[in-house]
Image (cartoon, rainbow, N blue to C red):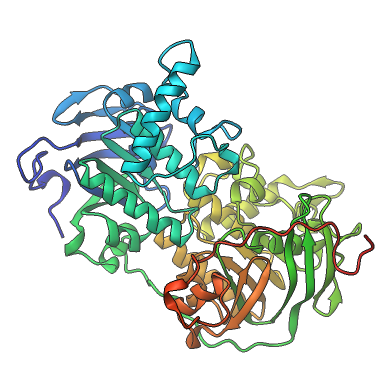
Length: 554
């Protein structure tokens, strides 16, 4: 382990004695009674990739928001390239050569790539000259850093990975020498994450300094030169990446040893809980999203669904959870505990699903799992507010609801432990814990859970995984959807792979490999003889537009 922050061997200088790109001295920041950052010192050498890790709520994003001018520190000093600077707002950060790519992108969805890049950086009142000059610079930057995107493409038409490239281009267009990325792979496919890493290495080779905020230890080990660890608002350790290990980093993050693998006994499946037969769905754009899905899950087992986002997993979860896109056409049959589930009628809503013993942790916690402006205690009960234990005659029993929420917050270690805070004031990982606590503690017969640990730190991942396994061991059925192959392989008792709305095949975790699953995710049922002609994993073919489901009148 490298020396503690106040004994850093660089003393604010990089190895070649040049000034550090970033030096923070004694940074503190409080929000009311919550001390988000406490006396933090940090040195980031120029031309390096420096990771900052810590549990959700450790203060990582607050620290970087101070560096980018979103927050003003209560105390402390910031030096950029060896010179003290004041950063009262993001414009001052940009002038200091700092760019930031946020976890949730700051793009105007109905603007083009080019318009987003110059937004706020126009040369004058006339846009046409600005757009013309920006187009040439954008093409140069895109070619130099492998950030290839069509400048005339509308943002809402781009994949998440390409939208992220636009955010990086925005920063480079503003001549950023220091680039901060906050959880950059949280919504990327494995292929997109690998491409991002190539981009970051290219930026480093060009002399740029990268600060990477992430909870994914594999990424830290793969891409960073140095890593600093935060815990509960304090900087607790610095490491040279090549001299540490995932286990040591995890222990530094959480303050205890952490299991980096899921410990579970073999499943003992019981009676069928979920049976899906020839399930088909056509959305409002007349695209067939589900193409004859057949699967089943028994009591006491976890079925993991692997696949790259966009291949029908989202539509499967939403349909089973009771809120498919309005106007979608659905056919097929779904049985829960042997009883047919209404897919299109008056009893096809999410409320009826909950009464049938189906819990649902949706893929997008902020859009589908929480009401961001409502408090934690309100979000802890949404969907179950009519349960008898929360009623006092014809009125809701708010005392009981608050007490129930306080118990969930304690048992799931939700931080800060304040049920009166709005959901938007919690970190992403703690927002996820609120949703998981609400659904798992209702003890459902069937749990639908999408991307359970997206944007969640290593300690919370361990906790959520244990709760999922405990639910299975209590005889419940779990349908798990995740783009994280490690998560699928370690949690699942059986694995189904989806591609282009179909189940490509099922495998047992002990009898398959990531490579085999990757081929199935690419739509390849059997390995081709010519390995050089493998398709790019997870990229679906052109979507098929249809007017009617099979068997329906034209």
